[in-house]
Length: 527
Image (cartoon, rainbow, N blue to C red):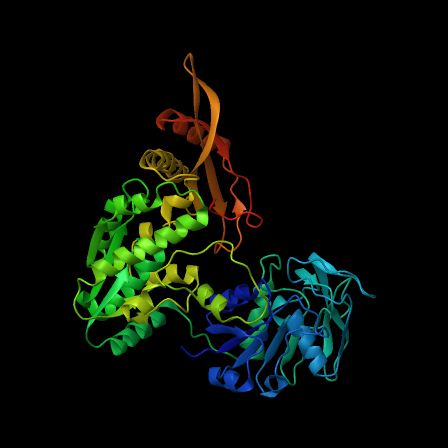
C-alpha cells in the first residue's frame, strides 16, 4: 500500500506511537530511517513527512542528519522535538540549550543556558496558525516534554505558536511553506489532546484524505496473495495466537485448501490448550495438522535452566519438527509468517542502537533451509490493527482477544528445570489465574495475566503438618502493545480467591506472591 505519510525516525522511543496515531486517524503511513536519501523518499512519494524526536543534539558530532533536499520537496512537514530542531537549523534558526536531548533513558547534563524539560508541562497557545486550530478557544495545553536542546531563534518566515516555561518557542509554523514544529510530544497519551494536533496537520495543513481501514486492507492483501501464489502449496506454523491465526485466515481466504497449517504441541502449552486450539481452527475452516512432540522437546530440555539456552533449544527443535512435517506435503512453495510492523521497523532502523534482552522464538531459520518464498501478510500492521483485521474477517472474539502467549510457552514461566511434574503444577495455577480474571470481568483491561512457578521452597503449615514446597508468582500487566507495561492493581477479593485456590488446588505449592514490577525495568515474562 502506498504511504501517504512518511515518518523519518531519529531514534525516538516514541516513533512507533506517531505511526499508530496517524493510522488511528485513518491515514496510512510508514517509518523509515531519518538518514535515507532523497531518491528513497521519492520512491515512497509521500503527501506529508513527519520528523521524529531523538536523543542527540543537532549540532553534535555524529548526530543523525537529514538530507536537506528532502526538506525542499514541497510537501508539508511536521518536526517533533529533534525533528523541530532539524527544521529550525535548516531554515536559518538557532538551537541551543543543554547539548543533548532527553528523548531517551539518558540524563542530559547542562552545557550552558536554558531549562531542561522532562515530563508534564503546560504550553501557552499564542497562535492557531500552526497545529492548534482544532482546539477552539483554548489558550493552555497540557503536554509531555522530553528535551534538553530547544529552538532559541526563529528561522525566517516562521512564527511562534506556543511557549512554555522552559521553551519560549515550544511550537512554530510557516503556513506558507506548510512547515510546522513542536518541542513537545503530541503522540504520547501524556499530551491528552495531541491527536487534535495531528488532525490539524494531516487534514488541514496537508489536506490528506483518509485511506486506511481494515476492509480495504483485507481486499488488497487477499488479491496480492492470489497474484503471488497462483499455484502450489503454502505452509504455516500455527500457534493459536492472534498473529498466526489472522495470517492463516488471510492466506486461506486467498488460496483455500492449498494452505497447510502445522500446529506443534511442544509440551509447553497451557492446560487443555492443544485441544482448544484445534477446535478453534476447525471452526475457522483451516486445514491443520497437529504434531505431538512433547516428549521430544522435554527430552532435549532435560537439565537445562538457563533462559537463553531454553529458548534456543525450543527454537531449534521446533524447526526440526516443522521441517519434517512440511516435507510430507507436496509442491510447497511458500511459508507464512506472522511478522508484525514493529519487527520490520527494528530490522531496518539505522538510528540508535540496542542490545539483545532475550532472543525471540520464531521460524526465521526455516527460510534458508527449506528454500521457500515468504508470505508475511501482517508485516505492515501493529498488534491492535491485527485484531481489527481479524474482526473484519469474522474471527471470533475469544481468539482475537486472546492474551499474547510466548513462543517458548510455559518454559519462560517455569523458572528452573523443565520437568513434567513442575509444568503440570504450573498449568493448574495458571488456569486458576485465568479463570479468576475472567470471572472478575477483567479480561479486556489486562494485557497479560498468568502464573509463574518459582524454584523457591519455603516452610508452610497445612492442617497440623509442616510443608516445604514451591512458590507461585502472579503476574498481570496492562499495556497497549507490550513495549511498556504497568502491573495490575487487582481488587483485594480477586487476589484472595486466586491465592486461596492456588494453594488448595495446586499440589506442591504453599505460597503465592504478587509481581508488582513495571516494564521497564522488568520484562513482562520472567525469562
